Image (cartoon, rainbow, N blue to C red):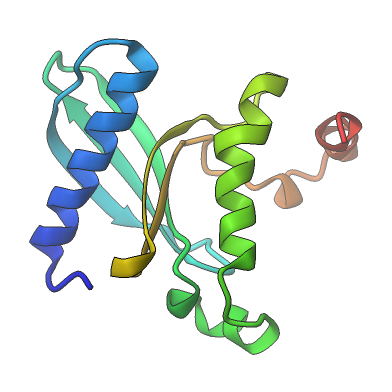
Length: 147
């Protein structure tokens, strides 16, 4: 179990460096993480992260802690605490969505260590708006047409 924020930060950096290096096919080093809690979450703890890389590239990331024990209060009232939903979401971003190439956020990295109660995914930040709040029904049709 993670003891303090510095340990968590170091694990986040290592996870992102591995994931971004795999995506780019060359070593990527994170010089700095700028983390901000995301207040719009409805189920799990989330953050918006800006990662400054050693080549001065700034990468916008959406972090999600999928540990079922860390579900937000509202989610705990309506959902079972179990790993099934978390595993399903992780596998969607890891295996199912990438080959479809339908414009969903990319999986930039992850740390999945059940023995340590760590279930993290780092996604491409798709921006501040949620589909449910855009008010354009055609976007909903586009989003579900591939299903």
